[in-house]
Image 1 (cartoon, rainbow over the protein chains, first blue to last red):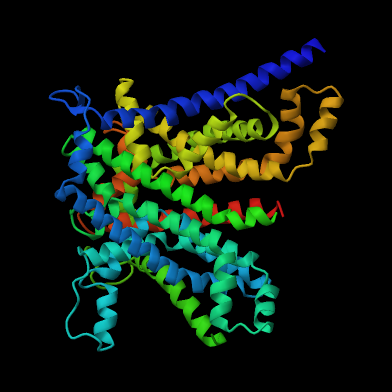
Image 2: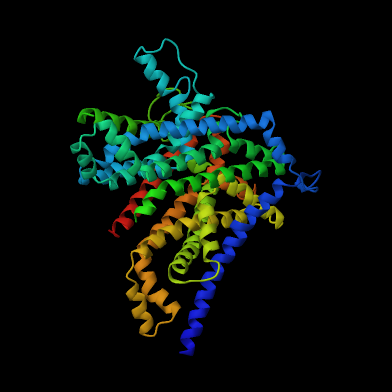
Length: 288
Length: 255
């Protein structure tokens, strides 16, 4: 009995202690350090110096930097909306196929999901460049008289974000649409609702968790993927990710970079709370 | 929507997803330096790739870090899942919160926060810092994968083992772990792929002493198309397909 108790406490202590120590050192501490760094001043020789100030947050609000955030937000929101509009019908079609045919077609979505997104971004260069495939196709079909210059534009970055992140939208949508009971839709139709009404009143609310998850998986990385503008958009500061990267590596203004990072974390936290509200609506709780 | 329209729509989306990759792979066999047009089949770029020691070193470094990070993250993540599922302990909420934060954190936030940590600790960015960072971002994905399998468990099995005199370590080793194996293996593969794919966190947590493949590719393609990168990318796409198929089979076993 004594041996059993000591075995129990030792293994449990090591497991719990090891996991918690790791998370405190590599998750809690770094996040607190960045919060601290965002309140520091820019140092002459060190990266960070005293006094403590809110200057960095003030700078973020200045027209120059606020513009970066606004541009990045517009791009992220646009890419999210576009992925949703493109992905929802696709996921719906896939989820309503006969069961036997679904796994293979789903696997074809999972493969790009796992393929290195840097490589997938690079692959887009072949399509978008002036002498690339898209221009060749459009010219060949006679739809254009001279090639479009798409590469190194903001449009290319938008296409890059959509292309890279589309599988991250499709997979959660598919998971929630597959769970949707078709009998509910039939019942609504039998009770006289037209197709549009069934879609807005039944399909959309019931697949809301998938929509929320997909939007988050597209929206958040859209701020971060600094290599997409680097490869497709020329060397412009388009995304918050490029901005933070520049502050840490080129401009060496760590407090400003940290403040931007804290702001991004705040956006993430806000969305996480929103999503929890969406997946556990108050009404549903009450009915249980 | 009519059936034909649905099929056409699905095909168009698949085309959007696959056309760039297909073109990239095709051009890895193209006998033209700038890849503007098709000049005939060649394996020249694959031969060049075999000669490019910097690129091969970076690839080996990536594989090494991915294997080590996946193994450590799988061990820690499995322990985290078992602890959260089986035990009631102080700091349980904190552990869950930290795992959630890691999973939700934008990559760039994690990258810079770990950079600030390593600089504060006086660690020079390189192999060790990169490994620590990769273990950290893989950990919650293993924990979630393993936890979801634990959730479908019969708790009586654990009670039976303990009634028969097994301590917590023996219960873990002889009862829980064998049943978790498919999820543990899937978690390892997931971590391995995540580690190999990562660009952003690596960008901030490694230094010139230890270059990894995605960063090497990143610095090469910033200035345009490189045939050697095409060949390498084609190989990496095939490796990804292999890993996805393997993990698919592993997780399929579960059902």
